[in-house]
Length: 96
Image 1: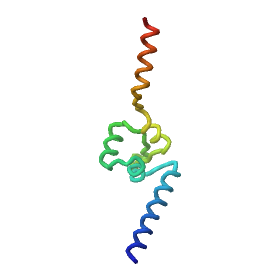
Image 2: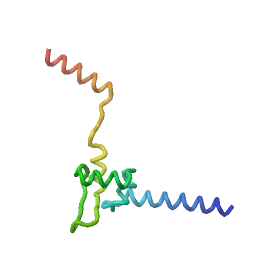
Image 3: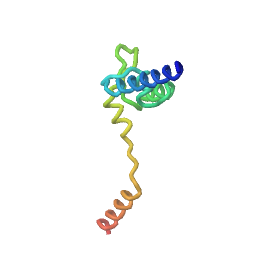
Image 4: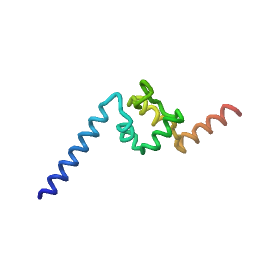
């Protein structure tokens, strides 16, 4: 009985942390890892390669804006087969 209560409390705590994370505008490095579901080493590689927008005030800790992370995650859209076919058909008609 006690284990079940502790397990439920842990689940509630995790849900509250996730909800809080979604409402924050500026994220720490650790929070950004959770937000993006990336390992710390992978996020460090992305920041050192300047592939992801980030802030480093006074050259120390890394910070991220959640809106910029959302834009980065959605930056490379893959078209559906239907969209590709439609574009190809339009191209063929226009450039005949």
